[in-house]
Image (tube, rainbow, N blue to C red; front, side, top):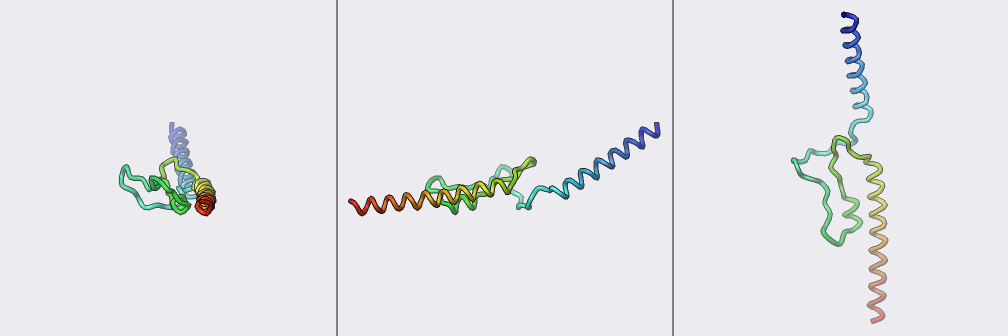
Length: 100
């Protein structure tokens, strides 16, 4: 009976150490200021979204979270695309005004 109890205590201690090491190594990424319940840092204008709006986009972190580097990469790609498209639209609109 004492062997089983010692085995159980050792297993709990090993599990606790593994959990603490994993929490220290992987963590949750950079720390963000806490938000009030139900609030979201995700903000975008209702129209005329600019590349700067996309670059400034932030997502709330939850327990299972997301891989921040991948989301940041996607946002950078999207903001570059928005800039390119807006420049092209302005170019086409200005050439259209010159013809009229």
